[in-house]
Image 1 (cartoon, rainbow, N blue to C red):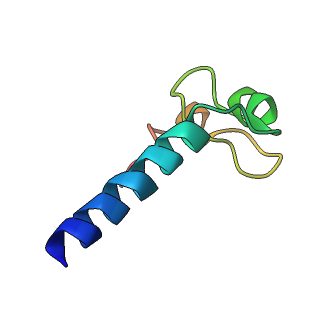
Image 2: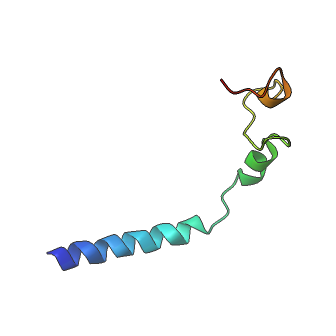
Length: 58
């Protein structure tokens, strides 16, 4: 029973690894939505918090 569970786990991990190598649609758009200064994703249309007052951290 343990051998069956281990084999199934390894097969599932191999399938996930194969899917992880693919380029999914929208990745280029997400990489363009990062702030050039700090590298965080920009949410909304306003400026990144790192460009405002202070560094944006509490």
